[in-house]
Length: 498
Image 1 (cartoon, helix red, strand yellow):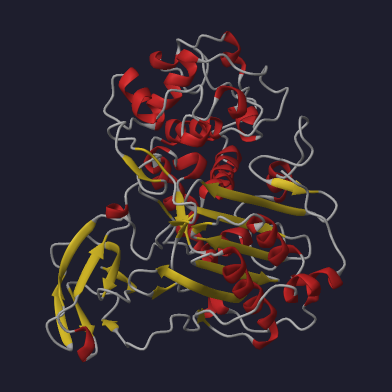
Image 2: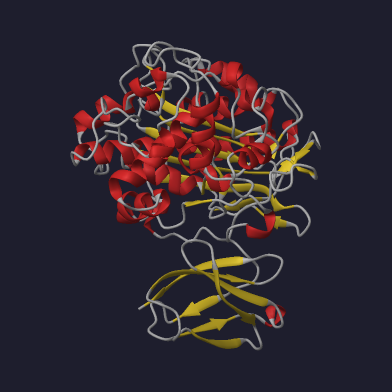
């Protein structure tokens, strides 16, 4: 992973105007002071053949920029809105790390805790048959800083076809473990322990490991007695006002509400994780999103990622959910690699923390907490077939912010409307004890509405039969639901059932 460096602002101007410029669809609130980011994002889409993207920025604790670019779905012409959600890939790892640090503060975990073996956190019988006894020396710190001993360029990565060799593939792994394909995170971990020696002694060499963060997900479940996603949503996300970050699904048919489609400009395919034979598009069915929760499974908007960054950035503008010494520990360099801490890449020169994500044939993502109290998140729904996309994402998050001399004074977190649509829809009353009224224009009559619970499960569906449609919610439990309205240009609303 390359280091982020501070460069002179003149370079940013050159980068901004050296490529072709044209207009692509943009949604969200226009901020004149930050128009340079509109052009930079437009360039990114045009120059790298990206279908859709999203950028959010905070300045001293305020959300000052939150816009969508291009298409969430090219088939329907649906534009990326500020509240659309993208797969995060490895940007999921800082979320996992934050949860671990929170548990450490409660005394439920310690960085030196052993993971496996009879005295380990995961002391299940199924994890006691490792062929390499060094596995029993792995600590929680090792997993967080990628020094657990696995090297995917040697032993492969069991979660991804691109790194499969010498691993036999997701489908065959599940069959070998006697579980229904594509298997689970538990069966994948067990397979690795039972069939592969570690490539390095724990704690000695930094080698990026999805397996390690998958194991951390299991650790969180063991010490909390809850599912990984449920614990993080209930304990970390919802208390700071984030309700729309969820673990995603493998298949397009199980796509979450307001989740973008994913595009692979290479048009490559890989073998299905369900039958080991059928060739499928890379993004939908060649790796198992449901088993990647701790290492790469989350789906979120750029805005919500910025809100999460504000809760752990160590700056006084917004209260942090972690203590200062905990944040310092989380972002201290590893002894094995000075540019990675516990779930974060580090640039000590500029006091920046960041993480990037990539899913083959699917997406790229990046978040950054800058030392000048500017945070950002940039999400892309396309695996581009033109080199340099990751560098351009870096440029937008690192080179352009210093060019701004007059930052906006407003705060888009404060409730300013961000959803732009020519079709006005409203739902009321909200919260509601038993019924919700959908007020919709005549153009939407005959289209569908769908309600989802917080896990993404469909709990209610029907048709909009008039400009004023009443939906009975009596049979639903109290809680938060997402209502998707319309068939093509969908709008999604949060509804609270009392």
